[in-house]
Length: 168
Image (cartoon, rainbow, N blue to C red; front, side, top):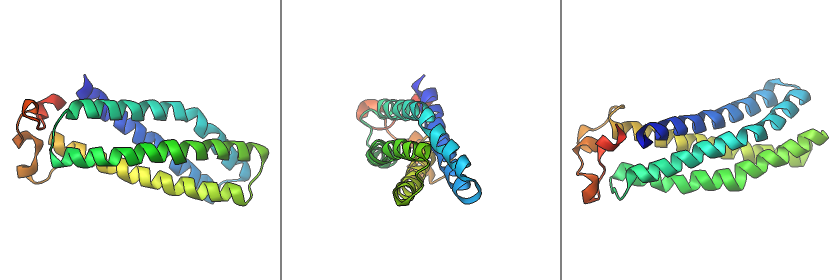
């Protein structure tokens, strides 16, 4: 079950952030102030879905990995605190702040400063989450790579190593 939840939740999380990011950039470049306001007001409504998807991704990933010490798993685990911290400390507060400012019609220096931070932080999370998805595909053998590094050649999870059969 976890082997199905993890990739679906990860893909949903990445898709949600990509949607927010692309809508923000597109409306800033091509849209009116009303379009920007609409996007800034819509993003907070999508935050519960994003938080749930990322929480499920993180929890299922840690559960699937267990005590494994495979280098790819270690890399994924190192990225997760940055993804979560960026989301909780930068992206969510930025989304709420931008919603409030757009509602007021306050498109001054504060709005565009927060917007710039949000766009950069969103891009960082998109890159980090994409790397985690790439590495997950490598672990499951669904993406090419050095076969000697593949998860299928690792010891069992009972020995503290990755067990690719746990991914289904």
